[in-house]
Length: 110
Image (cartoon, rainbow, N blue to C red; front, top):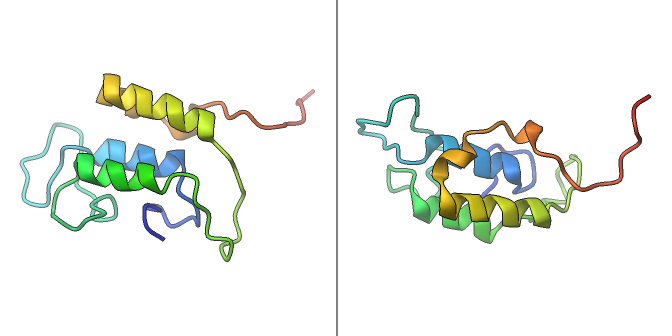
């Protein structure tokens, strides 16, 4: 599935996070300190992870492979927040996607 860089059956914040971690890297290097090239994040296959790869992930954001057995999540608010942050400061993407609060119905833990 195009844009699903972690192969979990959906294009979501975890895919954007992965591309963010690899952003600015290339197969040949040198790469920015602490960043590692990932062929999965090089969506267009040009041997570098750049804005073109971000574009593809964002274009397909929210798509779900219904044949894949995984959780479903509509994260449009999260998506807008992430895109806004990308345009402002790419380092914002170097956060763990599990730390992002999603707007879903959840049962409170007591």
